[in-house]
Image (cartoon, rainbow, N blue to C red; front, side, top):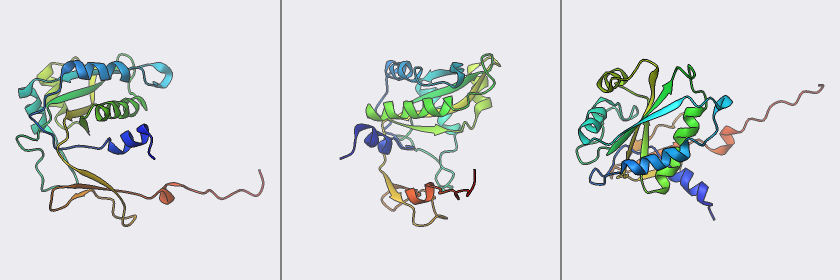
Length: 199
């Protein structure tokens, strides 16, 4: 029997299609961030900050700037009716630290788990259009966009499966539009080092 955390980890996927009819309240995202801020931070510097975007027109602008699926080059991204209803911009405050090593991944994973638990999904984007968004929001120079996170009610089925070969881990969609995500087997992840004969 799977534990709650195991179930949430497996359900916390990269969603690229959402039910645009389902809005998400800014207060919901604030509640998540109040938990996310309590995650571990390297040297406890805590240089990450966030901008919550729920304005529909601005969300559409950001959606249009993103590259949604590198392994699906023929797909142009979420269609009308499938676009995210909110975005979260993860920022590094360079007045505090020049980078946020480890922190960004820890916080983004925590955010994904919280969203999943609440029935939502996220897509972490590397941030195409960072310059345009920075200018659009008139961000000061010490706030650098680290990641762009799309948030919404998932509207696609994602299937985790064992990779058929070590050379074939590309995600793909079948004729029914289901999104398949191959994962390398555990045996490929575990490295058994040679044991030295003398220390």
